[in-house]
Amino acid sequence: MEPQPRSRGDEDWAAQEQLLRVAWYYYVDGLTQDDIAKRISVSRASAGRLLERCRQVGIVTFTINSEYYESFQVGRLLKERFGLREALVPPMLDSDAQEQSRVNARLGRGGAQYLQSHLKAGDVLGMGWGDTVQQTMEGLHPDAIARVSTVSLTGGVGAYVNALRRVRVDRDAGLQDAILPTPILASTEELAEALRAETLVQQVIELSRRADHALIGIGALGGQATLAQVGYATGEELAEYGALGAVGDVLGLFYDANGDLVDLPIHRRRIGIDLDDLHKIPNVVGVAGGMSKVDAILGALRGGYLDVLVTTEEVARALLERSDS
Image (cartoon, rainbow, N blue to C red; front, side, top):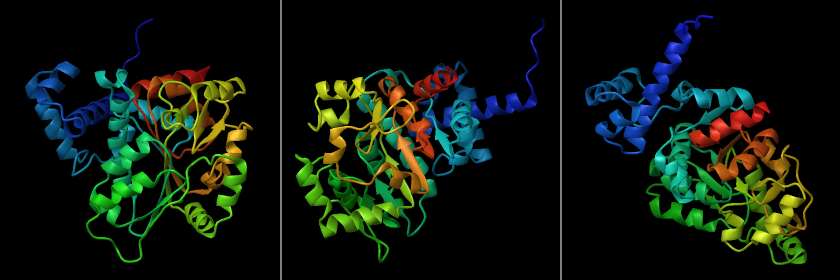
């Protein structure tokens, strides 16, 4: 059987995907034209012409225009497969297979690119838990931060807001930064219940429920789990949660492969909004990557917790493969 010719639509997708890849490598990752030429197997002159084409067609302005992320085919497929509003997939670099901190830094730049294009003056941005959330918040341009209020979705994220305060220049009148003045996990269930009863805690949680956008990380049970790194859970405890069916967590709440909440004692010590509250926030942006998180991200997608996903190319392809099985 003779191979079928490529359609004009396929050619258009391929051309736009190449432009997006080149734009990301040059403007976000800081690769040189020589580096890009070698990576995509073209001449240096061709790489230069592709970069110029990015500017001509509007893919590159001052930021990478998020509407063009659909041109990156793996992101487009991910969006369609899971019914997402957007899927942002930075093209793969060799460093993506290295330490998680480098992966998180790249994803944070991607998350910041998305939010800068979608935050409107007067919006309330809810902040979740994890390194990718912090990387994203620190990557936001001061102009984007200056026009929105922020609120923490759980306890234990005050450091993110402190980082924001260092880069704020001018604040619009009436905007605020609200922080839950608690850890994400109290030492006992009784203490957690008492803290939740505090007026200030209730006020902040009520504001977080009214957020226009939520920025969250996704935790895995293995690898470099954030909850384990900061001492809220041991490796043995995470293994126990896995034996009970958990595959990952968002906002310190553990769910199974279908995205259903797993009944665990740790949840009764947790302080923050619930998953039902998260579902009601109009735009939930998940920023997570690394192959150790594939099961956790897939569970979050199946649970419908995300409207937007920012992840690595390697993980995106794995999610598409596993969703077929």
